[in-house]
Image (cartoon, rainbow, N blue to C red; front, side, top):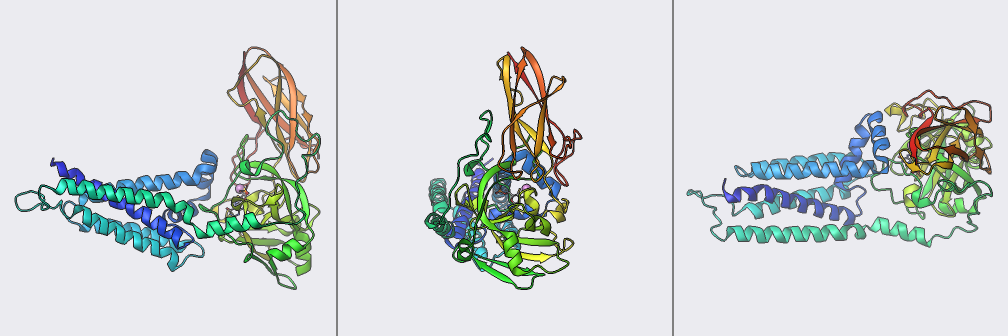
Length: 504
Ligand SMILES: Nc1nc2c(c(=O)[nH]1)N[C@H]1C(S)=C(S)[C@@H](COP(=O)(O)O)O[C@H]1N2
Ligand SMILES: [Mo]
């Protein structure tokens, strides 16, 4: 094989990555809503059957989206190498494949909400860069009639030099890109400037935290995160508006300032995801502050026959929430703060919905901008069309946090600990079974309300060797948590959490 045969795929790779870097840079510079690669990834997620996406979420936790982006980048890398190789014969291969990739990106971007010319421009620029750099790199590689590169003897040195400059340039552009997003900076700055009067976070209620496992109140930085957005929507509180309409007497349009001027409700509320498998960590507890939806809906005047609210976020995600959960006594709120600070951008800044007792996919709309009062058959949300249940009340569940499965603990008296929950019903009892013995009653933390999870702990003697421990909860209606194992689809997992560990 000729030594410069390798130059062709390398040229594809260098031009390909340089084009990617520059189009990514362009997307940030233009404040595009969606950069091409994340847009493709998001469209893949949106088009996959719900079950697959949810399996991805449970297998990869919060890293499902970065993983998909990485897979796309690997695929692109292979495509760049292949098109470079094929282009030895004719440049048409390179032009054709680059163009095909650009078309896929353009289609994905146009399918994303709120996108326009500004989002397509970086793709056009990227395509021009791809073809331009590839031609520059390969111009001297073509062979003359004698089979020598037409560039002559100096060609190899020239090629390496050009490719080096391109790689360095692309790396530089790639490195500065994350810091130039105007939208992100503006919204982060607006968030930092924001002072919400009277915002406080109280101490954890006495007795709630047993101090044996994870903290009862989850710090915002470790609060679980689930959404379909690769980059969170950057919503400016100064321009944010919520429209409440549909089956109401008076349509409402609420600004952030309106919201701050209203009476606020504060509460400890545990949020959980329907995709939380038994023993999983897609559940967290925080101090939320916001305005009761019951009051806003009363002001709008809900008409007879309405029994649901279809919520829409700034990025066009939707969920249908039963009206009753928004108007009964539970603190269903339009939250403006989490743990005594404005909402983090990833958790819905500036405003999101929080409804205790319902899974997030039917209630907890982040970046919420629209609420349509309607009927349940018309309030068909994002996950419902993907095979998930219309109704999503949280289920009675419990989890072992201490010890971790597979851990080795010291033989003797050991403190087992964890959490149990069934918001809006409440936990009456938690029982623990060691090595198939009798069920023993654990001590429970005291909770401020039925809106949160409950910690449990129990001291048991463990001898040296292998063990298995199982937990189950009993709710305030006397219902014992079912041992029947069910998958997260369509309406949340069931079954007892059971782990094995060793003592020595
Ligand atoms: N805009 C928007 N809101 C959303 C979602 C989403 O994908 N987009 N996901 C929902 C789901 S499935 C859950 S479990 C909660 C998670 O909220 P968190 O990320 O603040 O924990 O947000 C809900 N709200
Ligand atoms: Mo969820």
